[in-house]
Length: 326
Length: 119
Image (cartoon, rainbow over all chains, first blue to last red; front, top):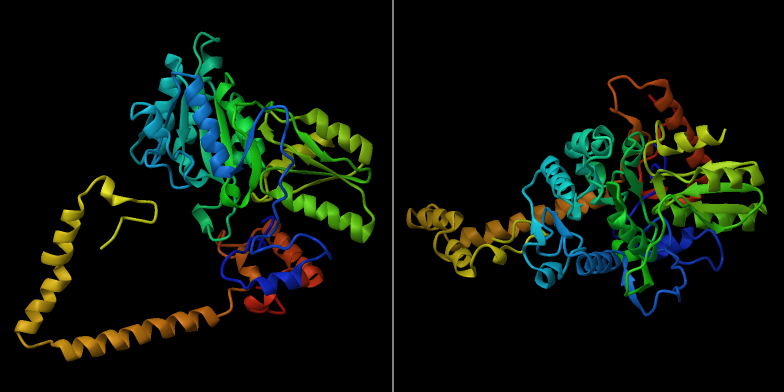
């Protein structure tokens, strides 16, 4: 599997990791396999505040419920604030009719969400871990994704957004670490989005909530506390289906999403320092529908493509990207 | 006696009084202890000694476990299927070669050594 053995957390003394730092002057890691580099605060969206990833999610949800009187948030344990604190304070602020718990039933969470969305209200469903999304797979693929299509656009569940913590966290093992984006990439009718940082997450989540198609928003759980940035307090949108070139280069194009973007950024720096290789780094951001134009344009320039993701290698989303580019 | 899990705050659905009742008056383990003490099958001395030796047992097991090296990396690929398909075998080999070249970047000293020949 890709990235085998690399995600290690736990009580390792800081000195041990210091010995492993590959570059002099490179940021010192704690126990994670990468160091989060914050992006500069944007100036065009007004006042900003220091937020970590889960706080930026709370902020986006707060904005959404304030703006849209039909918006509701539901899932397991969201009422008290959520197992990752993404919904802290929202039930107090917006009431128990708008932020409420569901039974332990993912199929029901999504099915119910589809129903709300079909009435025209904005449904924001939470699946407690992406690893648990599979009971809802039929609802997502056979109902949500095909609702508009099968009715010839008479009906739709476009105001449904499903959020789930995603990706490795070091101690997650089989059922708290998965990256299932490839399963959903094979399903026309839904959108799949994965942010790399708090700033990206708030803008992308708001876009998903406002997008008129059912969206799945995966949140890299290892970044919930570890990623801290200056994030605008007011709502703002980051467009879907647009990849972002984080640094330009001439020798190789490197594509990643979510947590792995930060690993790739470090790799690019190491490649430049040790091999004199100039890397172009792209954060894909939206997995479905993905920005083929930006990636292909980049590879046409550099001639080489490297894609890195946490999910298993066989059938992983890298296979879709590489076969398209070929 | 505690919450259901680290993400639970049980005061949201049960009163502190109820918890205390079960803890102080109706705790099944406490009741058993009182029963055994009245029958003179147990006493304070034995209680003290047992707690001490239990604690020692647990801490020793803990320390022993912490000293154990983690399973070798090649076991990542075991038991996915009953028989290992060629593609997984290749991936396992790629990882082995990767660690041979770049092992310094990994905390390999916490893991068991890879055997020379992989099954």
